[in-house]
Image (tube, rainbow, N blue to C red):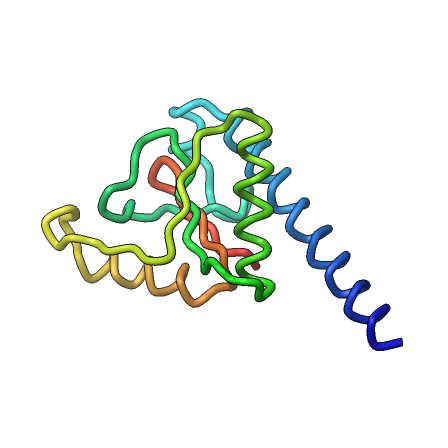
Length: 133
C-alpha cells in the first residue's frame, strides 16, 4: 500500500511537471519578443524579472536542485523535455544578481525574492520568470 501511494505521488508530480513544461514551451514558441514584453503575469504565469547574472537571451535558465526530491525531479523532467524539443536551456542550482545590472536594485531584489520563494524549479527566459506554483 505504501509503495502504491508513493507511485501515485510520483505520477501526480510528473503530470504537474509536464503541464508546466507544456505551458513553458507554448509560451516560448508562441510569443515574439514584442509580444513577450507586453504580456502580464496573469496571462502566462510568467512575471517581469531582472535576469540573473550569466543568463543568455532566448535560453531557458532552470534554477533548481540536483537531487531526488520532488524539486530536483521536476527540474530534471523540465530539462529533459526542453532537450527533446531542441529548446536551448541551462540548469543551475544557484544564481546571483549584480547591483550594476539594474537601475532599481531594490525592486529587482523584491521581484527575485518573490520568485525564489515559490516552489522549484524557477525558470527565467527573456526578462521573465516563473516559479513552479
